Length: 149
Length: 138
Image: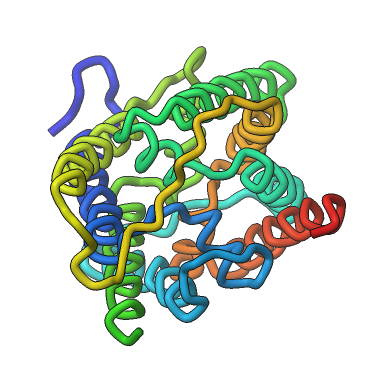
């Protein structure tokens, strides 16, 4: 299935992937009574932030992420995507780490869990990080800064 | 306790599977979505839409529950204030997301795809988190 006008888009895997992410976050909410916000859970797992979430639980969630990705890549046999080089990865990682702590969340906590709850904070956060994401890619393209070959 | 850990493990695994299937672990796909003024790739809008749809239903169910299925009680964010910290932090996060096409979830999930790149990104991200904690002194 393709999207008219967008030959590279993969709407069906995207939608199914999104439904799975929603199910995972729903399990966390209805099962454990918590928000599946990855940046917060990571900070908890590595002892950077305290939380009522047990540290073992945080680790279990974090370990599950690559486990799930591994299952999908084994099943679909998809070719490995290309990643940015070490320098942009370090710069991006640092900024993401600082930003998610200050902003109390990332794509999962604000974008999925908060938006679906109509949290005003999450709506503002998501609109903001989407906007600066759009601008960042536009500026980098305009300057000819290619991070992916 | 053991049920807590099991719920987290299953949730993380399904989450990681969704990220990989939806294309969130492919930086080119993510940057294609953020390239709104260029060759825009709308795939991630479907990811976001699917996830928000299921979670909106989950919130409706949550409202009718006294307590979660496998825990003593709900522990949910309840802040409502829009602060410069929230906006500034989110603005920074979006810049980092745009530079490498990775956010925290896909960063961890990518250990199954390209471990060296995932390790560099995650180490830097944890460094950034630690920096905030050190500067704020708590």
